[in-house]
Each structure stands twice: as C-alpha cells, then as structure tokens.
Length: 111
Image (cartoon, rainbow, N blue to C red; front, side, top):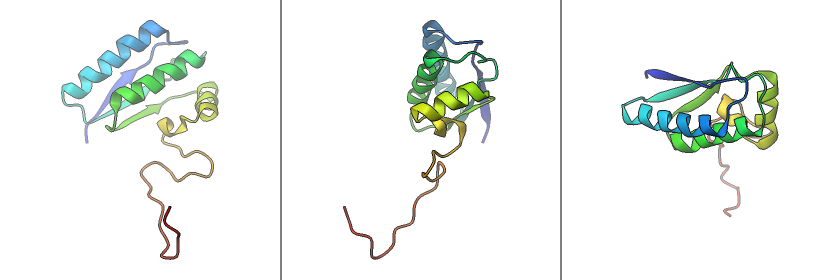
C-alpha cells in the first residue's frame, strides 16, 4: 500500500488551512492515494481549531486509511480529551485498538 503524506502547517492551523487541507486531501484520494498520513509535527501550539481541522480531515477521508503522525504531547492530550485518539492509531482507554473486532461469546445476550 502506497502512503501519501499531508503536512499540517504550524504552529496552530487556522480555519482557512482547514478548508485548503480538506480540499487537498480529497484531491489526493481522487488521484488514487490509498492511504494518507497527516504529519502534525509543526503543530506546536494546538488549540480546538487544530482538533477541528483533524476531525474535518477524518470526515473527508471517510472510510479510507487516514492517520496522524508527529503529534506532540499537547496535541495528543487534546485528541485524547475530545475522543479522537484513534487518529493517532491508538485506542481510547477501555476500547480495542482500531481495526480490532471484539469477540462475541455464545452466551452473550443479543441487544
């Protein structure tokens, strides 16, 4: 699988950056990218705008492979706080890792 890299601007992406990056991501997938890694190393002063940008990128990617790398401690903490830690390829506490399906026991009650 070929991985394409998308780089976030720093130190804190703006709403204008979000629109441009979402359009760029859509073009990458339309051009045949099979997986995109979003490099967040330059985001050194993250705020909720950065979190919003990453959430919008995830929505743009839909069900296609998309992951964030290079996130510093502050961005990682924000993503944990808002429940978007799966973007980092990590599972939330008490949740299975992304791509892992929980087993079902025969005596489990159907809901």
